[in-house]
Image (tube, rainbow, N blue to C red; front, side, top):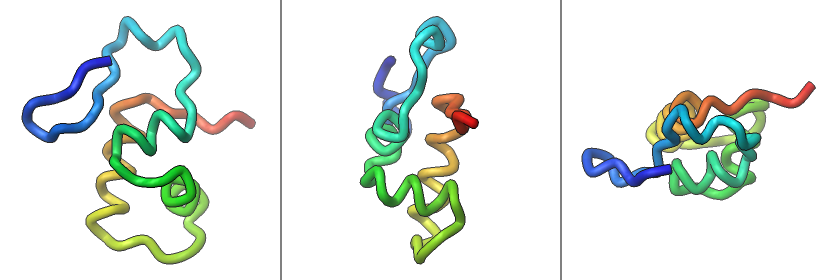
Length: 68
């Protein structure tokens, strides 16, 4: 895991994918609360557009997948 100079967020390198990514990891990467990440994932409740984009970017960068 490294901090990206361009965005100041935590990026996960492919070598660290042996660890399950949690909502807490995504929240830390996006700079938001776990509740905000959950609202974006479940499309439930209000999340500002900029915040939603940050969470979606963090979801993509971390490789988060729902545990179903």
